[in-house]
Amino acid sequence: MVFNNNFFSKETGGISQYDFNVSFNIEDRVYLGATLGVYDVNYDRYTSYTENLNDDKGADNGGYTLDNYYRLEGTGMDLKLGGLLYVL
Image (cartoon, rainbow, N blue to C red; front, side, top):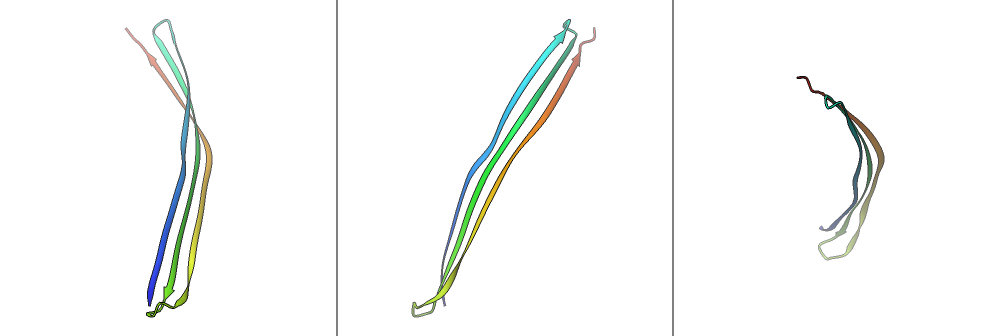
């Protein structure tokens, strides 16, 4: 029995990040800041595996194909806060 197989894979997409910042100080002694982060995920993957079965004389004995589609989408946020106090 002779196996003739083939595998194919394709991936696209990624993660995008956006940051929004603000900071200020009070009388050059107290420093405050904040960052709001927004994330966007978009990812696609396709895979295919094919296997054809042939006997020793080359005659076709059937086969099969396995396809897989995967999609990931999402959005997330984070908030970072910080502060400094300058003491003399």
